[in-house]
Image (cartoon, rainbow, N blue to C red; front, side, top):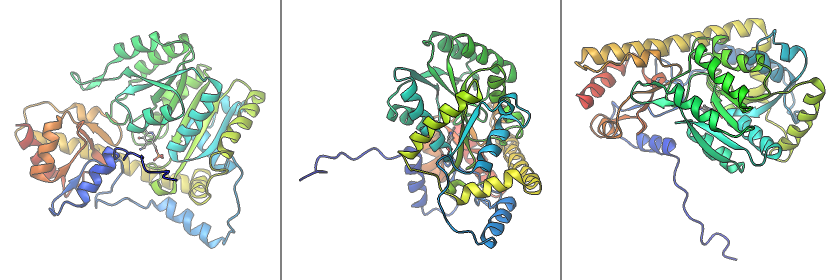
Length: 399
Ligand code: PMP
């Protein structure tokens, strides 16, 4: 029937494509700064001690592998909700929040997008310029028109707040605004608390729908501080959607754990919303997988494991900050005149380094150092063994 005869080859994912190229590079000193993963000082994806403990306990309990409910593990959902909104959140106490387990942060965005599309079929979705490369495609595939609000200012290496606010003010009411709650991917540039207050005011005044994406809670200034923007929107009484990813914070990438939280106006409304969100899940993949969710649920709900997790998360956060400061210092030591202090102010795993596409090409071709053509580097891929090589190479391509 020649079903597939005219199928075109889809463009390959730019970031995964870069990793394929890196893998086939035979130079032994090669460094991949193009990834979106936290590596430890030995260049490995860590297995957190809290995760290992929960895994061993679970295996020893010899549990059978039945189905989960459509919305996933109740303990995970409660833990995820409390983590992002705070245990004392009024919205939680009045039972007006709905949380469902999701297949990573991506799954939370996708369930949320599909649900919103049924609710607001004509809404526009505004994402930051630039944003995580999957945001646009994901919301477009859900059927929305996607527009970009100004965000990064290359002149200042900071936030273009005025541009952002002006754009948001021009959107029709009930437009959906996707906001990176902390540790902006790809730039590392986050609004200050004062700037968040201004953003929240415009969102409220213009009746926009905030969709807060929090994929790096704990990597910026700590678990509580990183959730401040989300809590600000909820405390203002806004209805919002929150996509949580546990991929980075638990180093559980391949287990695909996340959660979608929807903040409604009342317990009665929440029950109706949950029934609809469950329908979206049921017709996509029926119900989520168990193992990773059970591990995170244990870690979030067992005080001993939670304390262990917070400590390990703190170690990851501190190591990234240390790499930021070493990079800045070593660039100066290698004779770079340009001021790179902005790298220290950025939050999370990523840095918009200011490198041009031509400089990124030169880094790869002449020094076997791989970065994204936008200049995004993953600071969490730097370590005490490769930082000197990387700093020297960057210095040589920008001098
Ligand atoms: N949102 C942002 C901003 C991200 O950077 C990522 C992925 N790194 C995700 C969502 C998706 O996370 P996950 O891998 O858990 O699907």
